[in-house]
Length: 110
Image (tube, rainbow, N blue to C red; front, side):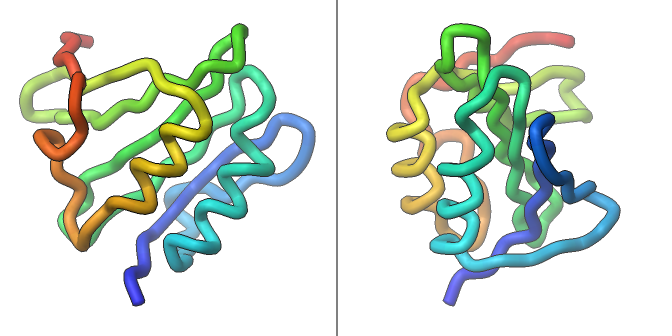
């Protein structure tokens, strides 16, 4: 079973910080996504064993920004998607988060 560290903030509920080192299966993370990523500004991220993060934040129009920060390049790979697409992305994850496995990601400097 594939396990990822995760974090999230639900501004109407609870929060799990990255420093809390919480882990869950893909199925458990998808359940959390479906309850958290439904309000603007809420966010959720997963972290692979190499500390690469895939995170999602809800926009005002309820679309999501998928984001993979690359600190050594001082930017992030991003893409605007739906919650349904975000769930599919997480379902397709392998042990390591791969930028090139996510079609249409664009690099943006910070």
